[in-house]
Image (cartoon, rainbow, N blue to C red; front, side, top):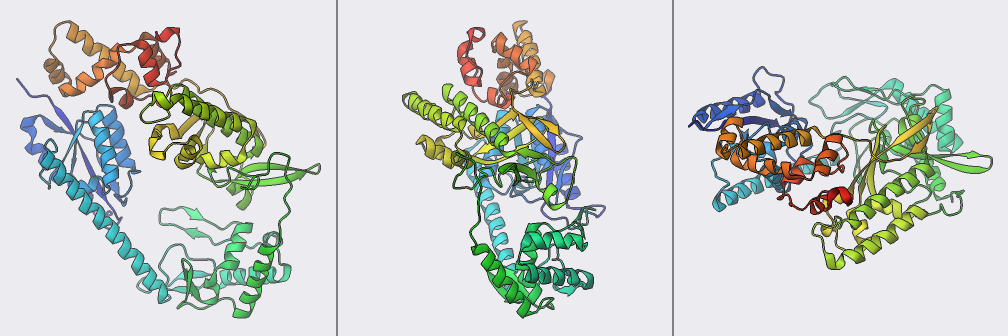
Length: 564
């Protein structure tokens, strides 16, 4: 009897871009070694996947890597049963990230192997060996990072320029071996003009407007990738950054310390001192705030300031205008402030956006509390107390509590079809009187439908229920489950099904149970009406209860007659 086929995916990674342009680079060498190892295991049924998963120039300290995410998606879809790497640290250098990867691979019935490090994770000694290897990989990464930070600090103390985008007024030294800056004549005149304008006007907004009238532009920089940055009128923040940068008097700043640099100054000490004195005096002047009743809070008027981004990743910056003697607040795509007009930029009414976020958070927490899904381990003894506190919190949010909203929302993104929010676990736990680690991590992520009726670049916010979104992975798993269960009922052995499909018996066993979901849940999956956080991985993580009502409670469906 032939052994079942095991589809293998080769994953390669290199931390730097150095040498990747060669005909045969490090990624190719890793791939060749892994392919040879798979060929040596052909008698065990191993076959190499044709797709390549290469991450070049990306650190192993993060899981946010394009090829790795593509690989994980194929694993979840059941296309890969074995991941082959040259060394374990090619997969990750973090113990915490590795634990997440192992859990995800186990849930999908997938294993992994390193071709240069022999160990068997089925035994306790093998797992210990693996943890030791990863500990040293993480230690090596942290020591390397400390060494680089120390080198940068020592170099800046000597007045050397350590790379990056050069500031306005300077260019990198033409000799790449010299870490220094040379003065860019035309840009230096722009810097002198900005300092002279502020010394004369003493107002950042006035300098910004005058600089635009004079045709002054920020530094235009072209990256190797072809992306171009800058070359636009100065924003208020950019003017302030230029005025506060000690590089223009021949200094180099490193964190809170300032050292003598090896480059020529553009501004003399007298003008610099005069400008800094005026900036300090301006920052000490009290600002007049106009606030509507009930909107004043310790975060100012903008509880979501610095927390939200639009669909392009541009930060939504708070701003306001005075209309008929009343202050009207907005959240605006930052490029509309720093770069002029953009038809794709967003101008959202602040009150509407804040109310929408408050309603989304309130509904999300209330639903989780009602179904006892807010905590990692449901506690029936404390469930009612937590639910009561969530109801109080939801009532406060719905009634308008900007301070509370600002504390709970950690970050978020507003897109054309949905709004995604991430909650602050510490703030939420403190509000509910529990420990942060007791909160289920999935409860901290919120996704809700979002629509904006545009009027120019301004818009009216409309938040409603999510549109049906069929999950192809779930639907495919459901279809396979019914097919496998039918084969079993017809007398086909589990081992025969595994051999025919190329999957392991455990893989078939865990996924075949999807056929025992209630008809209502299966219908909701086919229609795309399942809860946003219901995934194939979540279902197969634990045995499916036979009771339909228990299934609905476990997977986040609203209890009702259809689930009984």
